[in-house]
Image 1 (cartoon, rainbow, N blue to C red):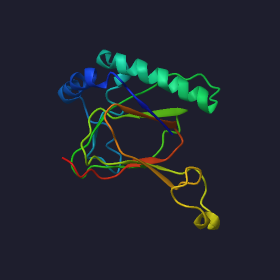
Image 2 (cartoon, one colour):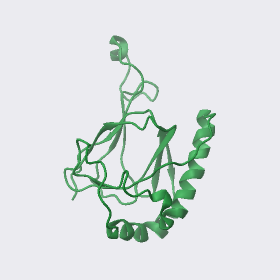
Image 3 (cartoon, helix red, strand yellow):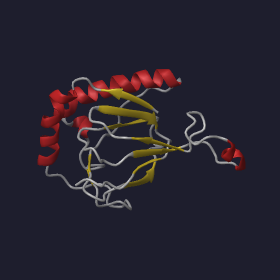
Image 4 (cartoon, helix red, strand yellow):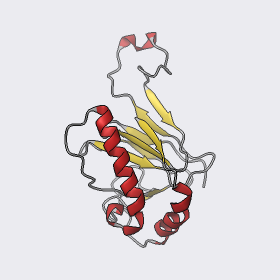
Length: 169
């Protein structure tokens, strides 16, 4: 898991928020357990939305750097992107993106008590896990990220992750 900060975030934030809120598109993810989260998965691919071009170009460059760092050998081609709008008590169940190599999360807008993104360790648990501190960077069981505006989270797509319930509205 890597974190990168978009230095032009404040320049694009309001324009993208207004655009997302103004889009009248069908909600995606209706077969998800957490189906109250408004998202455009499968209904509006923001890779094809010109307003997102600058952000998408930066994200792609960061993904290429990450791919090189982790030794990714396959050609990385962006395939799909969507946005989620969380209301109070909304969450996202554990899932992964096994149909891709590398995935990202970009935090466009957050509040002080926005829900954390939690990654589950890809290591199989064993009876010997109790011999390691939970917060050890090499043996973590859950890796929690506090959302911060302008941060990009980059990770291997097979990594299970979720978003805990939002306390903010």
